[in-house]
Length: 173
Image (cartoon, rainbow, N blue to C red; front, top):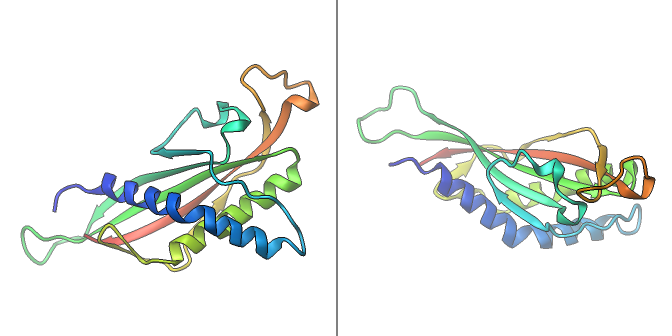
């Protein structure tokens, strides 16, 4: 088979676009009685890495991107012309909130929804997910300018941003 990592990334993004809003609603409902926090549907979807994401205005968040970061062929295939491979993809997401406590909760709950979407269907573009429980990493929250020219010394011009990364390991091909 030819190089198909971009197809895998597009399929992952399409699955998230279709299922993540419903999963976010489910997570929001689960927490509504004990610790309610609103979970907006993603505003910005992106394929690949966007190094300027932290410079975006708060109105452009939540932000979700899919990145296929690694394609590793199996060692010593059994025959020429057929070789299985492992693909490592990332679902990177960023959320914002007016305070640190809320942004931390949103980051965890977005992870909960993304994991639920991934667990809902194992096969993605002919590859099978290796892990039912994917790895999740969260960044530290940090101050963020709400608008491009915001004065960071004025409290109402600042919110908080936090990122998460869900690692999707796929095998096959």
